[in-house]
Image (tube, rainbow, N blue to C red; front, side, top):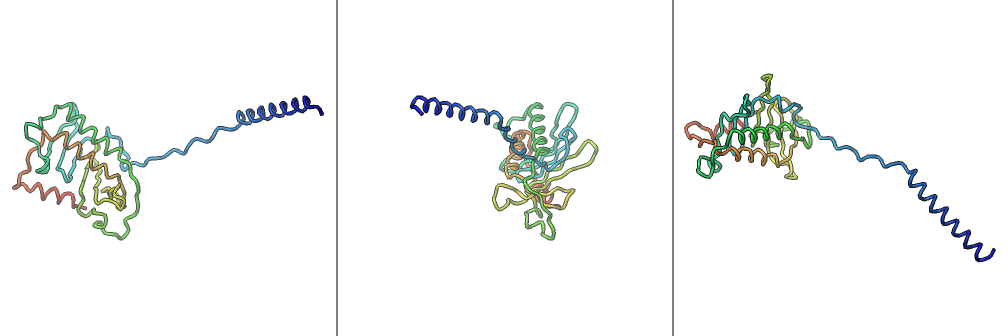
Length: 212
């Protein structure tokens, strides 16, 4: 076989190889889509069904109700270090109140659970749920209520042990949720009144959070 013939054959082989590769790429099935990450929410309800929200936390107490013109703050008492009432804390407008409370309700309803497990024979104090740092109660238009209590940080410090009033198991939620609640109270601080030592607000805050 002459050199020219061998060159022609080699070129033909290369062309056929390239063509076969291109064809195999075109015929290759598309890769499967990545698995969809499902999110399980703590509450299975619509935010539009919430007619009132009550918060008892380390920062204070909030009670707000939804009316025809939006959300109205019925009560806001902040801890002494967070109290408003100074010129630097002007009273928010109705639009600002409505936005702050609506966003808080939205965050509560959309709160994802990281984990959930049976409590079994373990005491609530093992999770810091005998004296919770946070309690949120949602009142629905039907008159029913849904509550969530937050206890101590988990071992990784990225989560918080929590539980719902309607269930006995323990769940884990993100620790940043506490910051979101604090931020809502801070945005409403212009409406706050100073706690009255005679009314026992400090003790009431601790006692209400400790109820199981």
